[in-house]
Amino acid sequence: MTSTHTETGRQELLPTRKQGFTVWPLWAALAGALGFAGSIIFDVRPAAETEAFENGEIYTVSPDDMLGLDATLGRLGWMAGLASIVALLVFAALWARAAHRFPRSAGAHVVTFGLITTAAAGTLGYGWKGALANYLGSESGLYDERGLFVYYMLTDFGAYFPWFGVLVSALAFVWIAWTERLVSRVLGTISAVFAAGLGALMLISGVPGIPGTLMQLWLIIAGIWLAVGRSRITAVEDPA
Image (cartoon, rainbow, N blue to C red; front, top):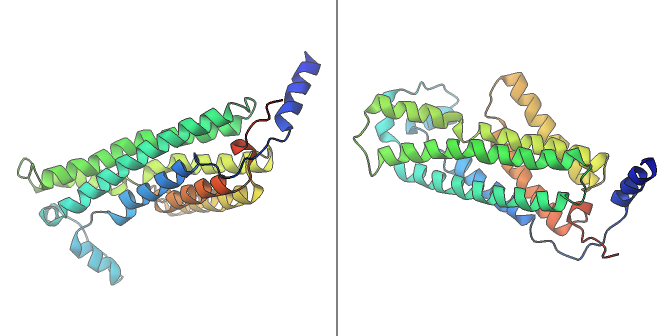
């Protein structure tokens, strides 16, 4: 039993052949780009709050600001967010298939679970964004300003905090890069900077939505890196 276990471990460390460009990791880059659009570019805020922020001032948002929100911007954010979730789930499935060749790697499985966590929570976050846009647009008048304000508060962190799952995936990248060599150590170091930096900032500041400000960028970098670089997780298994 011991010799079989040892032999299995050795087989997992054997090199595999890389056959040029790998397409499937680009699903991660697509998910990151769409997620950044859904959370950051199409973020819906009252004009007065945005102006105050640009001037370094504090503005208290109230129900009176709700009817001035941009329904079209909110709808675009909802659509981009849902598309990001679809791309993220596809990448999670393809990653899990690739990680199947390394059954003893707990870190590779943590990556999958982190991605699925973000997708699940993001479905709610972006869904609230879409609901707010709906009640500001085609179904306007069904809720008053106070009702809309409830949805606005849900969207305040709703499209940001779910990206904590991707932060966990990035931490797993650090592990599989430096202990298991499944991905590039350079990519592992970049992952450490993003995950540890944003995680520490979140804990110090107490702002739970911080992972949703830059973890999409990490996904873009990781997806492109895996597609064009050399990593065992994307290598083609030797037929022998």
